[in-house]
Length: 416
Image 1 (cartoon, rainbow, N blue to C red):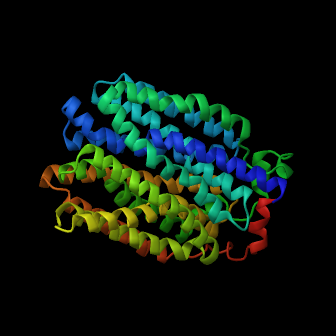
Image 2 (image 1 turned 120 degrees about the vertical axis):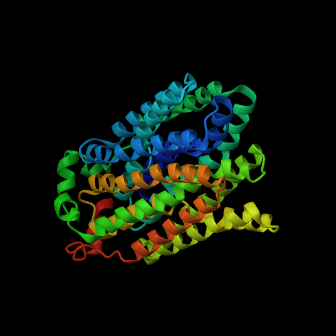
């Protein structure tokens, strides 16, 4: 292993840690907080769904700006700023007692997660690695799943024993103490050999389309549709998973354990999908992963209503865990394969708007359907249908004209 490769993996490890703590304290714990919010503040399902919706909308709407900044600034600046915003949101939440202030806190967290996690991590991983780009992206974004193993049970324990305020403060502490200083010291957007030029000048030498031509391609809009449908189905299920299990008769602690179990499974899923993407291309792997993800949502219904609930629950944990990260780990690689790297930061930020619509609207839609039907059945069936639609959409994606002509050696050279 060369010195550059060792440094690349150190950066990957640092970003993995940043995602672990930032995503773990925010995204992975939202489902844990929804039932306590309803019990403590008296909010119904529709009102409490404003929390994940505001979080997701803030994260997604910030994505284009984050992508724009990443094409012009060092990634460590963007990640540190995002971590500061996430920690500030957690501290605001610790003092919140009304829906307005809680929504405001989660808006800050959403902006922070957008700046500190998947967009910069995907960009840095793509720039530091050539032949193992899929694996590198898979490893770094697996930080979200790794945190899902420990953070939901920890948050559930803290809420039950110390209350909401202390829990939010405890979740903010490692971001301030560990994440921000470590990222500031270690993370670098591109290898040393390219550091003599400005970030903007480096981007001009990369293969791929400019923003205008990319926006005129079918590949860009299909990627946006994939993120919209896929994240709507995924987000609607993920954020309501623990309340749905509690509604079905599971205890809050058991719901948290299910969250942890699927997160543990998803670590292997991230690595497996990265490995497969490097060998068969992300464009071929992603439709299959989405089909399995959609099937897992139907298994969840069996875990709620069937006499064979244990088997259905085990199937859900395995299938959902292995594929829930496909839109985070595989879609960025599909974007590179179809649109190139030149304006990846900006384009991925714009594609993230589709994720915003999906993951923001999904939880709100599920909450509204539950309040209308007093059941999660129709809501989760709708989520499964949207994920299957995303699988069909991605199967229709092909490289944009001009990107096909870029030789593989040119894409691999980005790692130097």
